[in-house]
Amino acid sequence: MRRSRLLISLLLAAAAGTVTTAAVPQQRAAAAAPVPLDRVIPAPASVRPAGTAYTLGAGTRIRVPGNSAEARRIGGYLAGLLRPATGYPLPVTTRGGADGIVFRLGGRDARGLGAEGYRLTSGGRAVTISAARPAGLFHGVQTLRQLLPAAVEKGTRQPGPWRIAGGTISDTPRYAYRGAMLDVSRHFFTVGQVKRYIDQLAQYKINTLHLHLSDDQGWRIAIDSWPRLATYGGSTQVGGGPGGHYTKADYREIVRYAASRYLTVVPEIDMPGHTNAALASYAELNCDGQAPPLYTGTKVGFSSLCVPKKTTYDFAEDVIREIAALTPGRYLHIGGDEAHSTSHADYAAFMDKVQPLVAKYGKTVIGWHQLTGARPAKGAVAQYWGYDRTGAPERQQVADAAKNGTRLILSPADRAYLDMKYDKDTPLGLNWAGYVDVRRAYDWDPGGYLAGVPAGAVLGVEAPLWTETLSTSANLEYMAFPRLPGIAELGWSPARTHDWTSYRARLAAQGARWDAQGIHYYRAPEVGWP
Ligand code: TNX
Image 1 (cartoon, rainbow, N blue to C red):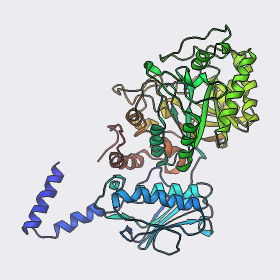
Image 2 (tube, rainbow, N blue to C red):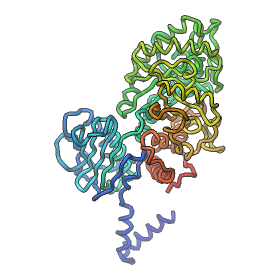
Image 3 (cartoon, rainbow, N blue to C red):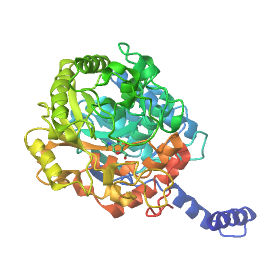
Image 4 (cartoon, rainbow, N blue to C red):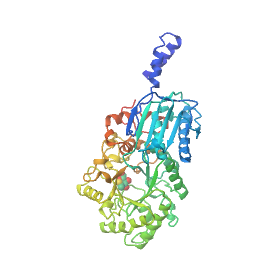
């Protein structure tokens, strides 16, 4: 307030010619200072400021030489991001040239950048993004976005100037798996809402969207061989609303859209617990042959598939086959958490039968870390969701599995669970794993998190968003922002860049971007928002 008043009086005074004009250019220069190259989330692996800034102008072209249709598509995506606020035409051309925004795919420049890395070089004539693979160009584009003023995210024409600081960023990820989970079962979210979340995730180089597609409160994906799962089992949600489900066409659209943002979808069908919606839809899945009513509360651990019944495995195979056919990615998540109504022997027997079905349809199993208490299949991945009160024997079991070749995705509930309240006053969310403030979500090291786990066993990190208390996009955003970028940074950035003070300052700079994008984030008091 005070600052804008000062600016107005300065401008009025300048217009009236009553102050020396030297004060005005100085103000302008301060406003136009480009974003420093290291003010990016996730922190890039290497940053070398040098030389002069590049300035986007009305004549800037996006040059995508070579014959990669995918690189051209990413050029078009970048143009689509930049056109509304800049008002520039930003044509995408295959014509070579050393000026403008230049994409380079493959070749000598791209050596050492791997499957997802990129190099961004900015100078007076051009900003160049080099990568070995299109994924790297896409991630480089996300960095480029953050190097422009926050106003570039607005949907209407803004004054600029649009400068990108001079220098070079070379960047590759620490972990191959950088995930976010969305629970579409407790509350259903439409294809449009999922796409909105995908766009938010892509900005922080998250490359996996895990969809929790079934639980006690709702079955959310059409299965042709068991149609009532979706039509009846998907007909409600927590609190008793109408629920909903994805048709196969809807689901393919989510998978396609995610892929266009370099995210792979990991579908989860949670078994043998968390299955009330399925048990309610088909009486024959129950040991007593009686279908329970649909469930709209928030208790966990009360349902189980009937482990001794043959029908259970016909069901599991049909579902796995149909879901595998919709899944271009390598992983299929079979849940396996909180099976409190399944005996341990039954749980292990169930997993012995179901894991081979996943392999039969060409996919690799992911299960919640309780799977390590059974017999994880060769190559299986366990998702750790323990927290500070998780007992030593349970941690040991996970560490032992890791030593035996089970790879881990880390989602510690008291760090990475986006549905935990920030503090006691948070109006949404749960608190069974405690409060997770912004610093707590960021300030841990996936590499050293679980004692006895070989560093190479960690596949990556994932931030789950359970939705017992969340029913709108604004709710999701309030819980995910500003914590999600911290988990994204743990997944991407080298451990040596880890530093709360630096992260906090970089996070504060994201607020104006979220304002411009209409993201309903929580203005956490620990972050020194400008
Ligand atoms: C535990 S973590 C669950 C979910 C709940 C969540 C709420 C895990 C694998 N299971 O069923 O939604 O807590 O925070």
